[in-house]
Length: 261
Length: 261
Image (cartoon, rainbow over all chains, first blue to last red; front, side, top):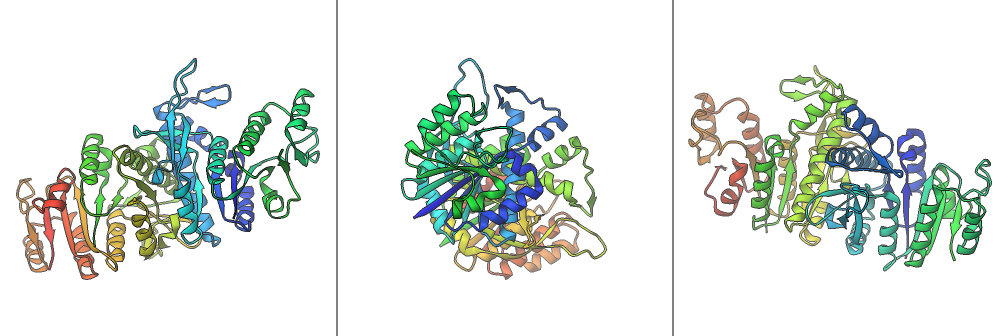
């Protein structure tokens, strides 16, 4: 049986119009599905207003206790519950989850090496049976905030791309999983200056070639490394596409970049 | 089969020590159980820091859009998910829910009569079958934030006492339900100056008598009206007790005020 795991980034969450259109397309996807969302700039804005300094190291947010509270509020509350309520209003029965809910994603607080990331989680275990029980219960659509928990009882800030990948891999034990990363470009581009230069297919050889030529740019590299790791770990296909083209990409296969071996 | 629905107020949520002790006692309650939590002062504090004015009319918060966002963050995110993570750490598999999740509690935005309460929900329907499916799924404990939703896709701020009562009544179709209101007193007091003057049993006649004598004070009246309404609607018993005595009250029946006919 097919299952689609779709990740949307903060840029989709922050853009009300794009987000509404995305949700309309999302509910039109044929197979059972799971949504994983990122955080967006709202967390940074709210932290600022609350007088909490946002510290980024190498593009990653350092999550001290005050920052953890903000992301718990914004990701786990504001963003997650509004997505769920909107999905309900367009006829899709959704449930909002963090990794703590139902104990579905257990993590370990990242050990301090050179950098102390604070309350950041590295995923240890996804309870795929629990997620399947949700999908089986009146076709509920799980909507995941990028938060997990550790057995000590702390919530942990967790990278949404990684979380989507871990969920997709775990669900591959029972389903034929497509993992879809939605963002603000139409796919992986061969020319960053040209939004229409979408690379339709990527395999490991092409990927290495594009990297060596500098065609695939820095921010895309961890995304694609994640994609290939997901495929190696059992995910059937990975798609990278624009949030406004998710229906065409998933249902019809006519948009975005398809990644395979 | 027995089921216990327990409501804790903001004063428990705000008091870390009391809350920890409560959770330890809560997990020791024998029957399947559901937790409903209030908001606490954190929402007001955060609203203040964000420059959002809190407007109360007759003890009720007026929920404009900015305030709705704050309570969604604080009740649905910060408070709810931390309770869930703490319950997980002490061996109880909990799931945090608002009424929007699984479409479990549908409300209607309160119509404007003399006062416009804003985004406040009056409960229309509780999906007891969905809650039962959670309880049946590995004995998961549902933890409800005081938020519901309407079919237009808005989240709605909802009184936690009323929400606990509506859940207890709906669950009475399948279970023998005890509804427990925990607060900072040992029960309903016959002398507000004496914390040990707990009225052990209350029935409608005694209630009317105490009210006419002015023994039962203002804030307690809506709580007790809710309690008697719950009994009329099928709940087996209502208990009002201190958050630190919930185990004695529920498991042993030796604390708090028991309310019946």
